[in-house]
Amino acid sequence: MFDRRYFKFEIVFFVYIFFTVSVTAQNSRLRPQDSVVKVPNVVSLPTIDGHSDDACWAGTSWQEIDQVWIPWGGSVGASDYTGQYKVAWSDAENVLYFVVEVTDDAFIDGYVSGGDYYNYDIVEVFIDEDKSGGMHRIDQGAENAENAFSYHITLDAPADGDTTNTFAVYDLAGFWQVVNYDDHFPELAMRKDGNLYTWEFSLAVYADTFDTLNPKASRVDLSVGKIIGLSLAYCDNDAPDGVRDNFFGSVEVAHADSNSHWENADGYGTLELIAESGIEDDLADSGISFLSYPNPFQDKTIIEFELARSSKVKIDVLNVLGQSVANVTEARFKAGRHTVEWIPEGVPAGIYFCRMQTSSFRSMKKLLIIK
Image (cartoon, rainbow, N blue to C red; front, side, top):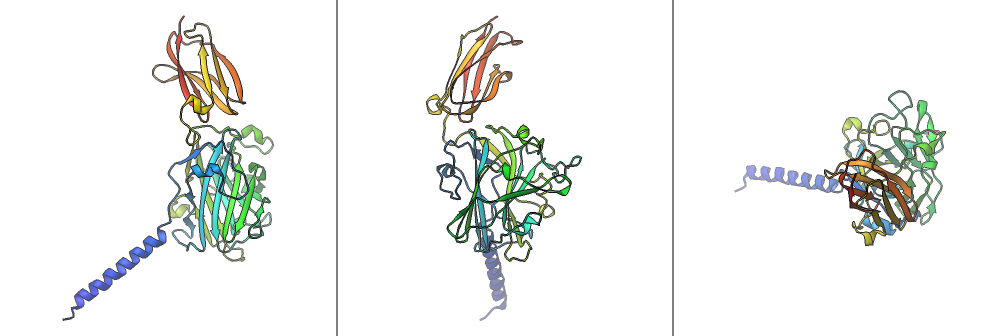
């Protein structure tokens, strides 16, 4: 005998299952970037040619650019858009490296300086060098335009199978003026393969003291352990009507913040610069020798080290509690043998440890001071 109660239950259950599976399938690829993106130092530098097959990229993880910021909470099919990026850094070149892969079924270019760049298909890099957060709209009071940068990378897509190196980068600076920041990107290439667009570029990092009249003074010296605020985004325009259809980002944002990255760095993601992937704390593998003499010593100690390649070197002295009591040197050295000396002024006699750190190596030597 037909029972309407069970039939009704089965219909509701089927609808529930169908809706759940549909939503799960629709959102299965939605994953914000890692809470802390570990960024390795790379010795084998990428060739900036719009390919993601360089050896250095093999040791890094893809980070998704799939959070729908505008319209917030919306969704698009994979055939319309997908995006992801990788990031690395170089101690030798003192830059960040990026590769960005975007699948876009309709690439809208033709941007002219002075227009609304967000209404074209562009990659955006939001970077806050010291992850201090805060406003960065106009160079006025607390709203310092260089507290963070929102780089908008514009270019015309090349022919299918070709690569372009012609680009322009814009951001808002003082008094709502659009400023060109091409020189913050030493190298850039974008390649088109059907609907796949691969952007590859290097980025010099600047502090919030940036001054267009003296940019070198605020260039940041990248080092192991540095924390940087960073999100990537993509503006997607599906028709040449001058209207942005979707805005995708690499981090989750609240509805109220769906279009706030350009003016507020509070919601940026987090990068941590780490040592070269796969290199152990071992003298033989690092190509570095490190010794100090005499030991024990009274008036001064000589510290010698040899570098296989250019690197930033930090040498400090720790007490038995692991507290740093003296900074011997913190500078960039070329490949070769180097000697520095340390005079223990104000440091009482006792047992200490001399610590040496580079982008790919860390080691300590015991020191004995007698007086």
